[in-house]
Image (cartoon, rainbow, N blue to C red; front, side, top):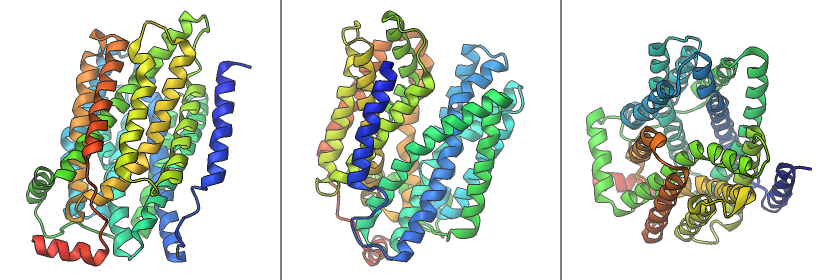
Amino acid sequence: MSVYDVTFGSLGLVCAYLAYKTNPFKSDVEATSAFTSFQRNYVFVFLTMMMSDWLQGPYVYALYQHYGYNQAEIGILFIAGFGSSMVFGTMVGSFGDSVGRKKTCVLFGLLYIASCITKHFSNFHILMLGRLLGGVATSLLFSVFEAWMVSEHFSRGFSPSLLGGTFAQAYFCNSIVAILAGLIGGAAAREFGFVAPFDCSMALLCMGTVVVFYTWNENYGRASEPFLEGLKKGYNVIISKKEVVIAGAAQSSFEGAMYTFVFMWTPSLGSAAKEANMGEIPHGYIFAIFMVSCMIGSCMFKYLYPAIPGVTLLTGVISFAAVGLMPAALGNGQFGFMGLLLGFCAFEAAVGFYWPLIAEIRSAVIPEECRSTIMNFFRVPLNLIVVVVLYHIGDLSDVFVFRFCVFLLVISAYLGSILVIPPKQSPAEMKSTEVSEA
């Protein structure tokens, strides 16, 4: 039995126990059949769209390599994707508040489908177009769907205490979906080539977009507000509301470290495995281990929140994430392969806890009328961090990059500690607030 089997089995048992104790699919508050139907519909769409994204991730680099592009050319394509998300994604994402969030979710599906189609061509310029479209789509995926759900949740009169359960369920199942996507994408790539996972992704995108189009209501921030006015309002809210700018900076710092980790865990564990004479690392198996760790984190969120205040949990989980990266940041091989692997598992557990927690915090601190706009503004600094790191990645040591990640996490933890989260408002209170601020 390998160390991977032992790690996966041990974490799997912990996850199964926590899932049994917390039951992510059961609400702590009695829910109506209307809420249950709404929750299932949203979680289904969320998981469908997330699975389409998971299917693509492991094969983007491999497909570009298959088409004959070198590391520098592939790096340009990746930087273009993050740059597009940073610039164009922010602008398009704000459409959700004025044009409509349902329409913007449909736009996400169309953009990502178009991005997948470009993968059938080896021409660099067509692939570049695909990266630009994919960058915009990614910004929409991580903003406008959540904005639609939060707005719809309150507009239908559901209790604010039910919101955390939806987030916990969505992100717990997201880890399961990620593992399934790895298995399906791997089988498709082996059987039909590296472009096949993108075709599987397209099928899911079509299905999810159709469900959104026919079953979702439209909701807005301020429908009558011009596009540029919406951007300006979002910016003014960020600079005028202390809790919004602190929450955004904490999110950007944490997720900047998280996305950097995505690029760094493979070479770091690979080098440690070679030093330990363990041969090549099983990337898919390790990814599955990480996803089980994320599920443990999601279960812990369900167990601890809201009994412990969100600010306390945010500071604690980000600090825990920093500790998880310390073996890699200290370097010198003193912790060995298992030290790195267990540290990375701790980091992934923190990520699993962080996702539903930060979503819950965003629902409380971001004003409804410009929710999509502000959520996309939050993604600008983290995309800038990733672009800068990617641009210089060849000149930086693994230890330096992980120390930079720990530095970002320390900043994020400090910001979390000074964040003040206002109480959630009822739908009637939200409307009266909007009127008074108009």
